[in-house]
Image 1 (tube, rainbow, N blue to C red):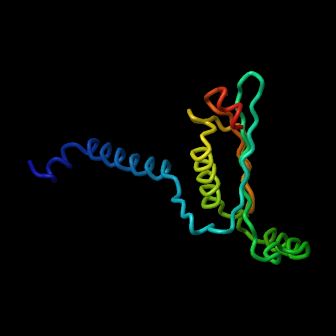
Image 2: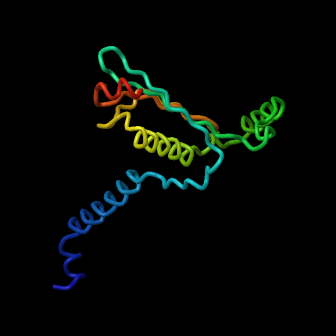
Length: 155
């Protein structure tokens, strides 16, 4: 049987195959995280990691990252913001905001590396809060493991 005969005999099979391939490609694109390029933010990021161990052994943390701006002029002046807002209001395009995917990936990478280096959450963590802005980011979380005597002494 040739491919042409197979296609003409079962158009539903072909459509199902195409749909399945499309779904796999779509899910693969959605599940992939952006690549983190450490050189992109080299020397521009300062971060902090604060721990909080409760009396019942609950381990909490707050990770903060700040993007050091090279010039103070990168922040628009108030009259520039008003002018840009007027132009945007007259435009047919909807304001999308800045693309923060690279910065978000950098913050997540920094948190993972910090936890890996200090060993605070040995069994992973649950994210409780996240705030990502164009020049800063905060992630708060709770460790899946409880505090032991070594944790109490170290942190």
